[in-house]
Length: 155
Image 1 (cartoon, rainbow, N blue to C red):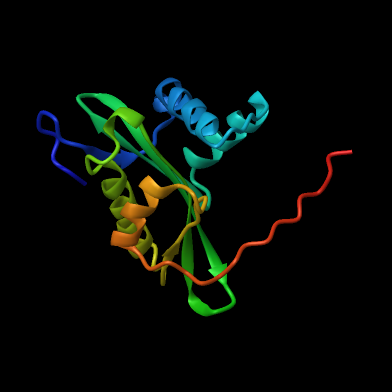
Image 2: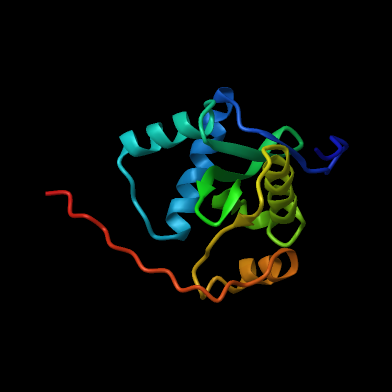
């Protein structure tokens, strides 16, 4: 994906051996979005993104240290014969933001989606996530769609 020279960002597939380093980034990601998840959910998420199913994960590495991740899922759609790709989670260590790591992770998803025959890649973020949106405005087109959620109670 990218060169492994000093200070360079390497984008590669998430591996089961990345769990400890991924846990720290995942905790920071959840904190950023003010979310808490039970340990069992985190375990299931990691199993999905490091397995061989529809979900997948890439990591960004610098100097042998994980500094970011992206999770995505390829799925069928009613609008095309080709599948599409939903970029579900993207996180970069806050000390490295603005340095190209996020862009490299997105480009890694683009490459993976092309290899899997996808028609497009899409994602969402909070409307007030200005820093991330500056990057997203450079690498994609803002959709006019509005999202609605209905969450089932856990009773």
